[in-house]
Amino acid sequence: MTHRVTVTIAKDGSISAETHGVTGSKCLDYIPLLEDLLGAETVSSEFTEDYRRTAAEVENTATQQQWNS
Image (cartoon, rainbow, N blue to C red; front, side, top):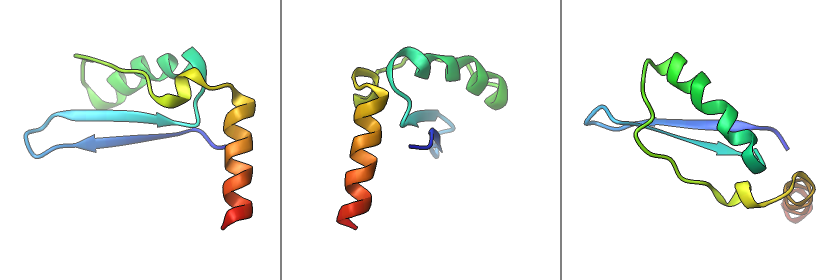
């Protein structure tokens, strides 16, 4: 599965970002990169469902979704 980051900028100027397909603590590697790119500072963060999943589980889910499409 491809790693993706969705960045959302709200009308009030607040920025949120969510990783997709990044398992475990590897998602934390994106924080400094996003802060640099966006000129922003992280105020809060939460782990997504992918944080608790393994790379194999994510790959199996992606394969199943392809077959069901």
